[in-house]
Amino acid sequence: MLFKGPRNDKNIFWTEHSKIKMRQYRLSESRLKRILRAPHRREKGIAPKTIALMQRDGPRKKPREIWLMYQQVGRRKKIISAWRYPGESPVGEPIPVPEDILEELKNLNFDK
Image (cartoon, rainbow, N blue to C red; front, side, top):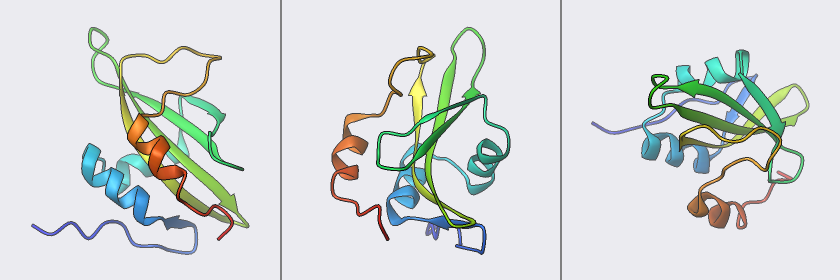
């Protein structure tokens, strides 16, 4: 089945990078929208002018986190990236971003 990804609307713009990461980490549009509506944690994103949101995922014995990074552009949220983190990330420390995403983010233009 072909993954078309989420559609942009007046409230949310999905970057191609975010669509690729959704496919890679098997994250649905509805799951990421739930994170936007009710994050368990909110941090400063690693890319310029971004916000990172997190929701816990998985059982207590084997916790995981799902992270979403976006940029507010007017009234619209521009979804930059999303990923799963295996375990619990420490609060007050830099957000845990996988190396592949860090490399890919270097090539993105955040001013569009």
